[in-house]
Structures are given as structure tokens and as C-alpha cells.
Image (tube, rainbow, N blue to C red; front, side):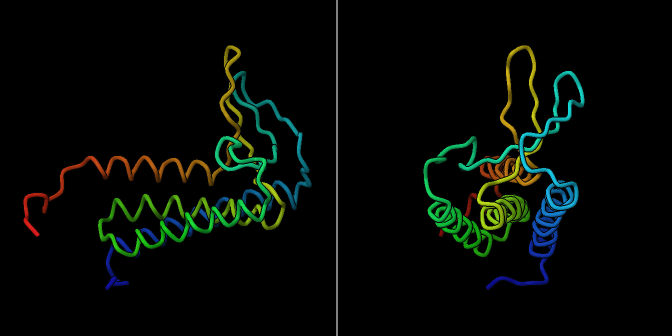
Amino acid sequence: MTDWRSPSVIWSLFLGLDVLILDRLHKFVQIDVMGWTGGEVVPVTPFFDYVLVWNTGISYGLLGGLSPEMLLVIMALAMVALGYWWWKDTALLTRLGIALALGGAFSNAIDRVIYGAVADFFHFYAMGWSFYIFNIADVAITLGVILLIFDAFRPRRDAGKQP
């Protein structure tokens, strides 16, 4: 049973909720307040533009040919699986990684419901190379996956115990 007072629960819930709020606030200001509709480009540096691009796929535009409903089903299944993992694992690092991924995934899922696609804003490029365009939720998902990979390879205190 998960102890709702444990630091791993409190910190991970706080972090996941912060990601969700920050990404939603950013998108609200840019789309609903500033009125951006897509295609806007603001050059910031010689290697970075602030833009609005609508991503109809999942990561890197993958599965862009699927219907929005099917993408939501896939995302919901992934979020349920991550939620189950979060519930079962008690390690702080694991829960923080999952919370980052869930907060970002949930915000991008909200985009699909509200806009029919995910709003992406940050575009880095250099010397003919262009990195994919992403948003705050994508950064959180990526950081979450990095934490989970790091957590998977770190030594465990109970690794020598027999079941």
C-alpha cells in the first residue's frame, strides 16, 4: 500500500503537477491570450526560434496518420501503465521520473482534446541541422525518461537480498 505521506509521493506529485501547470499556463498565454494560431516565428538567436507548430503525431511526429481519438487511446494506456508503475515503486528517483513523464503527457493529451494537436514552440537549429520542435511538456517527458534510465542502472541497496 502506498503511504501518501512519504517523501517520494509528495515530491513526485508536486513535480508532476508543477509540470502540468507550467505547460498549460505557457500554452494558454501564447494561444489564448496572445492569439497565436500556428506558423508564427520569432527569431531569438542565430540557432533558436520561438514558433508555434501543431504536432498531430506523438513524439517526433510519429503516428501522425492516426486519428486524434486513437492517439488519445494510446496516450491514455501509456499514462495508466505509468501510473501503475508509480503506485507500485517506492523509490524517489523512479517516482520523480514517472511524475515528470505523466505531467508532460497529461498536458499534451489536454492539447489533443482542446486543439486536436499538440502545440510546440521551441526550435533549435544550426548549420543546416534542425532539432525537432518541442514544448515544456516534452522537456519534462524527456527529463523523466532520463531519470528512469539513470535509476535503472544505479545500484540498489537491496540488490543482494534473495526473495
